[in-house]
Length: 258
Length: 258
DNA sequence: CGTCTACTTGACCACTATCAACGCTGGTGG
DNA sequence: CCACCAGCGTTGATAGTGGTCAAGTAGACG
Image 1 (spheres, rainbow over the protein chains, first blue to last red):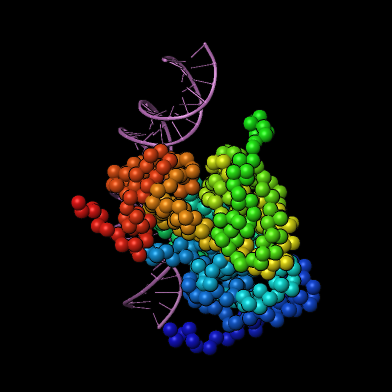
Image 2: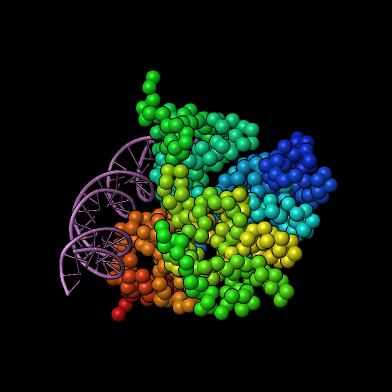
């Protein structure tokens, strides 16, 4: 309780010189539109950059008044819905440069909660100011709509995964999805750290924790991956792609020759 | 083949006097915003109302150039994505007054296909004109964004269903979802016709056809529903709600007393 | 050093997919 | 008029994937 209210140093903002959109290395990812310098400054002035959010803290809660969307600067966020029965369903993991909260647009309140998986810094875009700005910058609203429809596409991809794929396929898909997202941000596609717990992964993929654990160990035995707690290395991308059902990536033989 | 190209009478448009937004009984559902009479006329003039789409015909196909969104006037549509592996996943069933094609916004092409489940009439909203009109009518774009974010919410609900619920629960959820949507349109919430086949239902719910069939017959034995091929009647809404995980609707005892 | 949580591993079994056969219905052609 | 067929739906038998339960291990932290 008290640790929520204790003052927190502006860690990221002080260490990080990217406190302006114009200098932010993520700007090409978060809202990749060609903005005039003046527009960029307007956008910039509107953004609230609060203190970092600690692991486990909520960015917003299902039912909260919808009054801002967020762009993640550093860290990672999970979003999840809570059913009437109390079950939680993680609907997505969000990495740096991604927008969170767009689904709030349909109503006055957020239809899901967002929780930090690790210490996270965000750019808060207050809704009223964003609205006003959208009226001035023609491309901006369209860009936001693109983001929304991109999220629809992604969710529908996930529906396919959940309803048609085996546990192995889902796992491979999950790892490769993360991989490509890290790569897009300039990180290694083959080695990264899982910000989320096994429980989170299992929840997201619609599996039991035990199943996730078993699959990861089996993948290791098959030399598809290597893990050391949360650090993960993808050793055999073609095979993983084949598992995930990507026929374009040439699957090597089931038994790779030595 | 040839039946696709043969001339089709303008069935619905000729029989149906609602050829204008201002007289359309669905207008309050499809884009429920307060529009000036003049704006309504502008919107109206932009809409292309083509010939009815026959059962099995495509409204648009995954990969087609994204150049319009559609509002369903009469009939029903299923939308589905095709994975690289060829598997199809039905992502939604769309009834009269609902918008289809919004997920195209994120790119130049539709990320899914839309097929008529029965003879269907639609209002086509060409994208370029819609865009132009959005710049003039402030509320319109917001309304479309609401629709999009509503679809996100819906898809995320579906993710929860697919990953956390048993076959019975999914079935109950599906029936109740349809029920409430019919009710919203002024039809009976208790008796309606399933426009989709059992195969479609099973695909949508991530189940085998046999499972769907078995559950429906069991629901009948339990006197939860009555079916006659595609006609369906919900006999015990409280119990169905309980099954679907709606704790608010009082579940009667598991065995209802005689 | 003890406690807590996260993760792993094993044994068992339930849910639901799969395979197979059959019934029903509507359309087609003899 | 009836035989035939195709598509859709139902029902039964069987088996497999992945969930559940239970116990144990490993890290993190006070």
